[in-house]
Length: 322
Image (cartoon, rainbow, N blue to C red; front, side):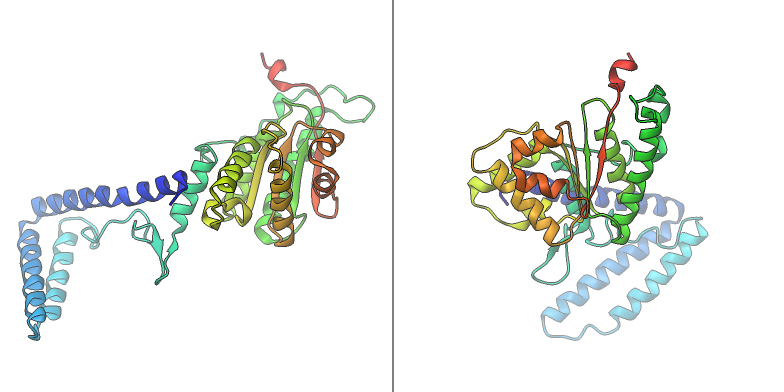
């Protein structure tokens, strides 16, 4: 496959097979050390099965192989239990039981396993680790100042408390197929937009939603690569159909003539038409978005019937914390 990230994801998946074999061998050594009879039974079972295969290839019915294998397996489980080990201790080891670490599931034509797709998305996201990254449980409102925001009657901390709750509600809605389709976080830099975006990604993933988070720069560069390779395989363009796409820092990407605006519009239009949620963060103002991307894109991003729009304001918390 042309896509290096997908190739790497598959390679990593298949490499687990060697790790599994080492684990199986280590378990067998441990079991035999505790119950030597297990080794004898395992050897007898293997030889009997091989003998049966040779007979079958010669057109001879290998009688009794299945029954003897069943009896040996039962005896091995009894010995494992007597040794204080789980009865399935010597079963094949797989890190992904769905594809058995082959990377594919189903009958021909086989489909990519979700474990490969998740790793592929992580690689496209720049190795983003949702497990240990930003989350709503680690969201610290105390970093935001309590000073009033002009004449708004609120403070930056209260505003972020509201946005946090709305972000949680949006993520839960995505999982249930309810609420607004899209999420737009806009405002000056240093106000917590990217952090909140990644909290949404984590929360949605915790609800079982497959997510893909990409910087706008990585997204447009990937689209450009596929565009010039004339490769329109959906596996190489997961951002079209991933259940939740999160685009961080819209506006920092290069503006390739004939590509950036057209392909971004096509992506947004496809996802809206297919009811695929998209969450975006940007430092650009509404006027700057319209000037850079055209009214077509701006109108879709700010369409309140489709999008939950959160306008960030306040002081750069990176400067406050220094």
